Length: 415
Picture 1 (tube, rainbow, N blue to C red):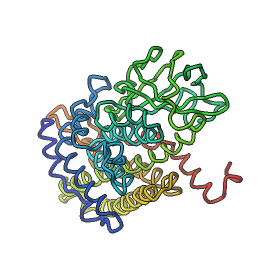
Picture 2 (picture 1 turned 90 degrees about the vertical axis):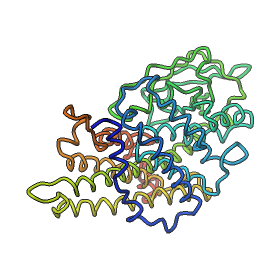
Picture 3 (picture 1 turned 30 degrees about the vertical axis):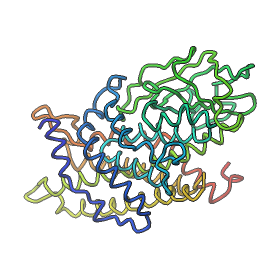
Picture 4 (picture 1 turned 120 degrees about the vertical axis):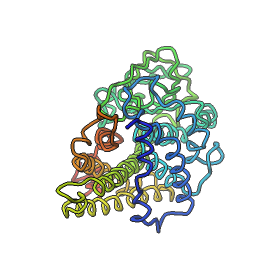
């Protein structure tokens, strides 16, 4: 089966979400965004998803054409207020989350690109001055500039303390001189700028830095297990001169901005985990109905009936959790806990466990990237590789459990 034939076959997979999940508490505005993004994803993401997920990382392999189509369709405007060129929605976080889910249904790489571009880089820029919004945020919404967001370093990721971080911003007469190194920075190989968390004396500050500035070097794209379309790399800073007007928010408030942004990101990653889980469910249910063993459909074996019943219930819970966290953000809660932590842990853990089941359902076919005999391939293999990173980035799932535990016992006990 050719790749185009496989894409056509995938388009006939039944979507169980519409029959099993009922959006009784979701605003009509959000439901409309879900349908809009679903139509876009079915038309534009599905046909190129296999190539995106199976091509080795390189700048040339970045889905430039799809990125442009998403910009023209106004997807990057969904999270933002009208005054900066956004849609001006009443529930922007909920709309953004369902957008991420619908994109992840076909390609977690694409969902991750948009998550970093809009939720991380774009959301951080909302804290910036009018000048920053004019020079960086509005071009981001247009798709004229690609954004990246950097906190992680070779020896600092979960621990973002001043003691652990080694990217320093030293005050000068006109701004800052930045020296250091960031690691695993999504979109960096193709980005125009980075929103950077750095040590500023005894505090932390967020800066916007153009990646073509003297002293900036972006490394080659990392070669990863999954999410091949989501390019990551190191960024090196060697005495980079940054004007004072490129401070995001107030100097010394960088960690607060970064943590608020990462919390929003966790809601997005929860949505992507839910999208992957829903794709696994739909493809698995179809396989169980059509694949036969011992004279009957595999779906007739009670083991798999019960397993899919469990997964359907878990997807229901995952979607409710991330939507509740997003709606709390739309109510003005910058840190919607415990829902954000619960959603991120639960949905990504579900995707990981379900991916293992789905490969088992497909048997040897699920283990193939592509079958040499006829060129056929199945989505479950790609999701099996893609879903693992969702349990790690935007705060590991262990950290999410710690956040939840702190809500139970208090920081004085949990530390």
